[in-house]
Image 1 (cartoon, rainbow, N blue to C red):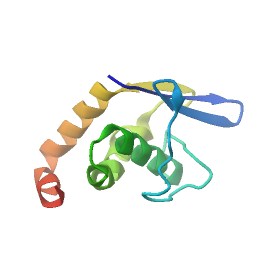
Image 2: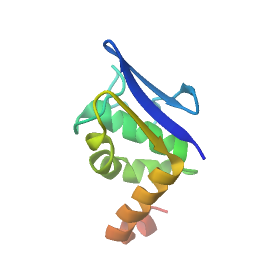
Image 3: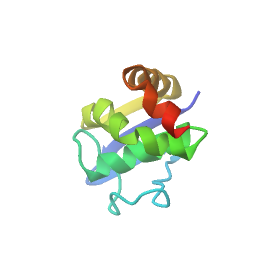
Length: 109
């Protein structure tokens, strides 16, 4: 099980997966060249949602299809100072989102 964590150190935002820096995945979509953010629904949170799902999901397509919904369901609600998500947490949210929109997954898989 992977552990994703984010914290603020002064003005710096640090996001890791199992202790190593999380790849922002600008190769998939560049929402925020200035990096990750959380706690609202902007471009930094979109980049974080995409990066987490790209790392978590076996298929980048799945990450690209779900990251905006994941942003609103999870990333926009994370506490300002520090947070931790596990791969189990992420799967639970994705399952819940899929139950609300099952056709999205079948059309894009």
